[in-house]
Amino acid sequence: MLLYHGSNMAVEEPKLIQQTRGLDFGAGFYLTSSQSQAIRFSEIIIKRRKHGNATVSVYNFDMEKAEECLSIRKFKAADAQWLRFIVDNRLMTYDGELYDIVIGAVANDQVMPTIQALLGGFLTEEATILTLETSNLVDQICLKSTQALSLLSHIKSYDAKERVIDG
Image (cartoon, rainbow, N blue to C red; front, side, top):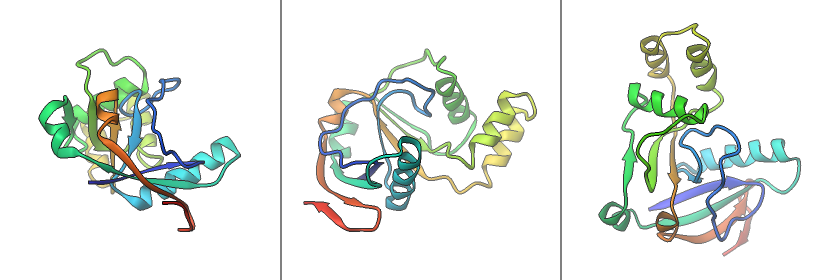
C-alpha cells in the first residue's frame, strides 16, 4: 500500500517522534493514504518551521504483514471512541492500550475548533460527533513502534510542486 508523509525535507529513514505536544494518536510517525493531504501538511510544516522545502515522501507499507503480527487500532469513523482517543492524546492523558499502529481520521485545522468547543464545554460529545459527521475527514496512519516502521520502505520524495527530489 502506498503512503505519504509531508514535511519540510525528504524523509528517507523515518523515525518515531517523541510527543512534545498533543497529537491525534500520540507519539509516532504519521502518514496518510492521501497525497493531497501530505502536500497540505508539508506546507503547514514550512509555515511552522520557516525553513526547508515543502516535501512529500512516498513509501510502500506492507499492511498485510502488519495485520498478521502487529497490534492495530482502526477507527472506521469519527465516532465517540475516535473522539475520546483524540481528546485524550491531544491532552496527553491517554493511558489505555498501546498499539503498533493507529489508523483513523485526521483532526485537522477544520476539525480542531469543534473539538476545542467540546473541551471548553460549549458542545456535548453527541453534538460534537454530529458536527464532525458533516466534515470531509482524511485518513492518517500513525506508526508507533519500530516493528511497524520496519514494514515501511521509502520509494521517493518530491517537492510540493511535483518536482522529483530523488528516486
